[in-house]
Length: 150
Image 1 (cartoon, rainbow, N blue to C red):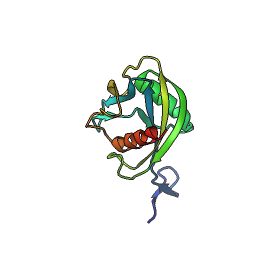
Image 2: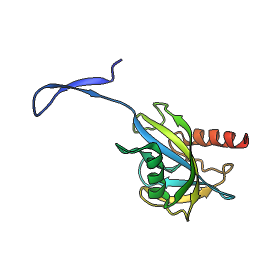
Image 3: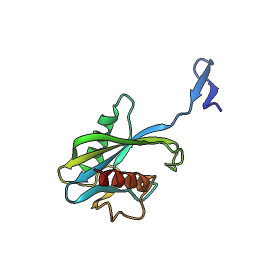
Image 4: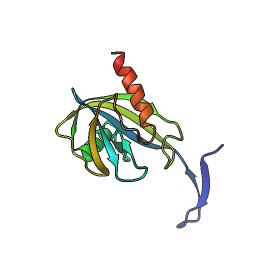
């Protein structure tokens, strides 16, 4: 099964091959020591609670995207940023096929909802909201399991 299609260039008339690939995202599990993790309530569909994150910009490293998204959505700086796991189920995002590289970090500063975050709250891992979007319940389950093995 090819993920490419051919179209004519509207300027020169040559055949151009267009590829359809998954979009790359980052999610950041931001831990507030002694309090829990930071989740945002989304302003845009799909609605619900989410791990802060977003799309990686062209020319941007995964780490830079994680730092930028955390700052935009929570107003916080990150300490001890570490790559956790990648999630690639084609059904993980109802808007289309995305691959997310998930990071963990400690939050530095006072969390405040920003950008496309309608609300922000700190949750303990054993009292997460029921309406988590995407595959974030699975991600946080894996994170909780990894944390309990330390």
